[in-house]
Length: 488
Image (tube, rainbow, N blue to C red; front, side):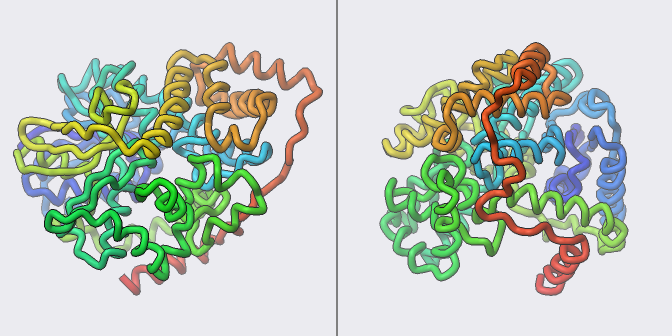
């Protein structure tokens, strides 16, 4: 079966290699042509070398093409898998640290809130360029499978303005399914779960076991679970008040709504510090920085590890390989994807991007009609959708006023900041992220003038947030990796 798959952002070693392992674990996909591209030639070569070694060790006669020329990578590709982080750690740091000065305390900052909105401005500008190249050099009708956050904003922009069919993929919904199965004490494969909403704010609206609805068992199950009742306090509180469990982690969910992170002295009441994903201030930034430092020093150790097995035994649960397998072989697959709504969820805006159950086979990707979300769940999603729409239009048109309105309408940002603070904060972020925001040339010039006038609103310079942990050393991270290998 000969066709081409291109990976953009292939320098993301762990994730790109995970997706590559999944794809090469499918017998019918082992003859696909593979291309990797990234703007960082060093990271690109490291990923290529590891993945090529895996292929060679498994006697799969595929040679990976690695190039910093993305048009060359995209040429004649049928599938483009996107996992870029525009701005890298440098941009990510400004997403977290600048809002923190204004009291906006984020755990992740990659989907909504001020950090997610600004991340969207960078990602959309780049992905629209990707789309232009895909239209011009890829196989006609090529599909982009997008893992980059903010997933809904990026997927929205690529479908509406990039004119490339783009499917947004995320694993949050998969993790929540496993949690629900655990609290119910039932095997996941015996449950029929329907999840619907928007990316990172999707709701488990039906959980059936042999045809019997079990929604009323979920809250008691989580409250009785010794681990989850400590780690998922925000999600359990939302479940109590809205009646449905939300897909995303405690830390993610806490920054998408106005209620849990607006008072610094109360944030600790809603989070648990056993794991960053439970809500630690800047938690994802910390672990990303730790992993980057560890990777740079421990790459030789990774290279010395046993190659991945590509016989299916190490295939994971990410949607990507299953979608390609289903489209190419006709094998049926059901998963929850991010797609343009167009009436699928009837009480959310038609133009928005929703995350819903989809079916894939040789005929393509089929999207059933979900109907109305429960009203409270729809209200939460609708608030976020308007922030997304403002942010998408701002990114596409370089419109600073829409960008500031998006930040002002964001639930947590609006709960913490007044309008003058939002306007100043966005000016500061535009200037700090200038190198990744080509569409804002005029707006950034004006932002510099605004900041140069003086009489600025005082901020909390050097403030580290309500619950921040110390960054681990390379040695500490390496020891954790070694421990996981021993216990695996």
